[in-house]
Image 1 (cartoon, helix red, strand yellow):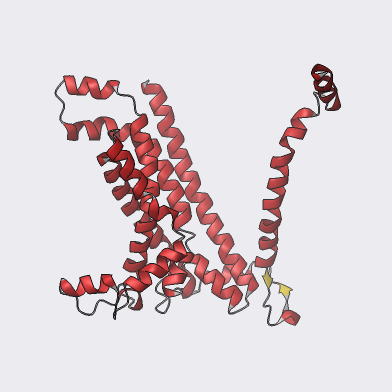
Image 2 (spheres, one colour):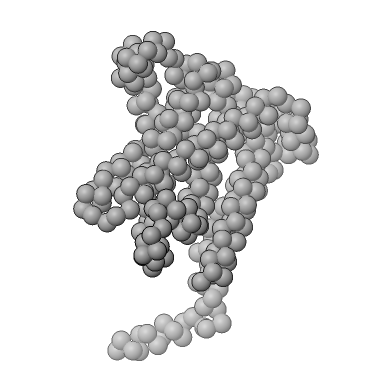
Length: 304
């Protein structure tokens, strides 16, 4: 009976149609992604404010041309790249250091690694609000510690001089565990034979790290850095929850700038153009990372 049912099911879909049926879900997802993307391109080519719908017209790229002479746009680009670069580098270094400390498999190290993942379970906006309370000059615990070590008027997110430091601190607290767990998985998956041979030859631990561990771990490092870079350069919730892009335009990154253009200025065309420029930047950066990852993989295969 069962064999008969299976035979009927196989006959229901011909072998020639089976690949198309199996790829149908992927096609639906692709269409679902492309519709908003094409819509954004269409809006970015218009002069369109929702508060002035009667003035809506195609300007065929004028929004992009204006960015070249717009000081606000170049400030947004600079802040976005500085923020993304700073968070990725610092989180990578901290995550690698923690992963090296927890490399050895033990119950204690496994427990510590699990506990260190707790910040990653916190919503970034909630973490930003928590830090906003802790940096309050009247009752914040972090402000109290700064006063203890001699910084009586450390203004955290309310000053242009320290606002970037403040949001980077929140980002590091939330996302360093992500770097740590990826690099820890990479460290624990490395083959043991090269390290055993180096130990027999009397190679120092530091030399082993630079000559063996780091080159073998580099694909994992690039993968972790790529994921964090793509996320950091699109950061919105931490920055908006902490400072709303301020003070002034100190933290006016792409996502915050696009959000304010859309919901405050109702400038749909400029907002869409900003997001498409952000997409182009992430596309270029991801291609650079992927090409380097493939190059390292081919080098590893050649060495093997």
